[in-house]
Image 1 (cartoon, rainbow, N blue to C red):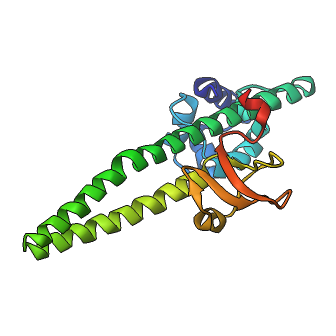
Image 2 (cartoon, one colour):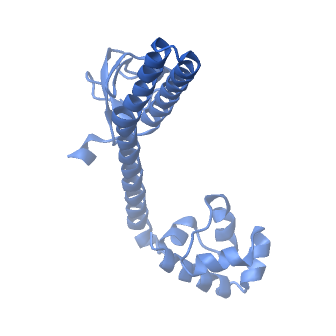
Image 3 (cartoon, one colour):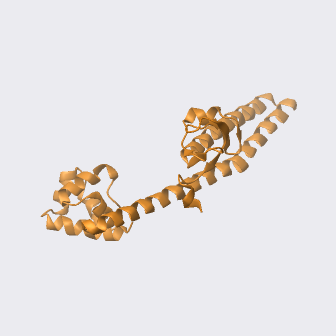
Length: 210
């Protein structure tokens, strides 16, 4: 999305509807500084007030996000382009999240394991208080990193059934309780009902990855 283009469009529509920045801001319950930031392309309106903003500007959300008035002929093409852009951003975010999880697995977790081993060594060396502290910190950190990693894995992308190739988002508990090899988890497919190791994929549609 072109923030500068959207900002200029907001400014034009505001003036066409007889609002000053201050008057529009008052209607929306925000500051005129926020409106100014929109119109200069420094930020975008929050999703929570987009519909209300569009009502005052006599436009729809699709037009707002494209920064221009849209005819009926253009509406379908622009809607598809916007959905495609949002889909690409969603997939890029999922890839970053899964990369973060791998970073935690290969860098963070081994560090905490070293801390636990060091604590055990100190206990053997009769430095029990410090050793126990390190072990406790290491164990709590490993558990915390595991919970965060599992949450990231659940939220990013989809799982693919090895039998019917259905791609879906399982419940958090299903992911938590499933035996796994890496990010592949042994679960029951909601479509075919068969169990198997369901691999992690980024996109909902197979064609998007070809």
